[in-house]
Image (cartoon, rainbow, N blue to C red; front, side):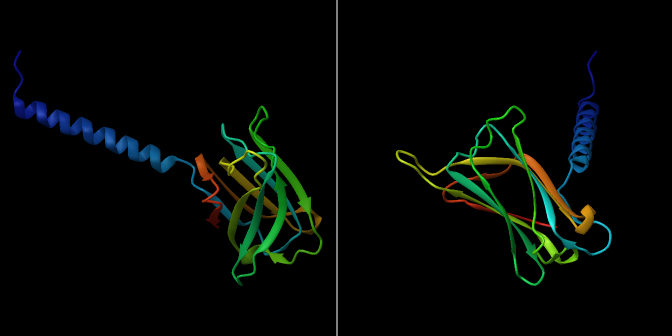
Length: 170
């Protein structure tokens, strides 16, 4: 049976269009970064940080610093995370910390920024590290959730000696 070339072309175009529409639908359904205050504005006093890594770990003599960025321009530096993370079975690192002296209002937070600092040792070059995910939850006095920001990727950011900074608005 010989098919009409116009009909074959139409079927090909319809099939390709359907495939593109389905692919666009899946891309739209992918989880974007999520961020923002939770509930009423509140002073953030405690945080829960979770970092995920890929096959490239953060060396023991490197560190990660996380800041909250604010509308007024005054970034609030949070806990430093010492290196030596990434060699665990679930490839994530969690840290909970608090500071009663922080004065960061959840409604003034505009996002986070992260810096990896490589402290090279003998016979070492700059550290490279793949951050696959980051989640930062902020809590008000009494432990009420007040702010959350998170994202994941493959990687979200590859930190190197010449590319040490990453930020996320939210």
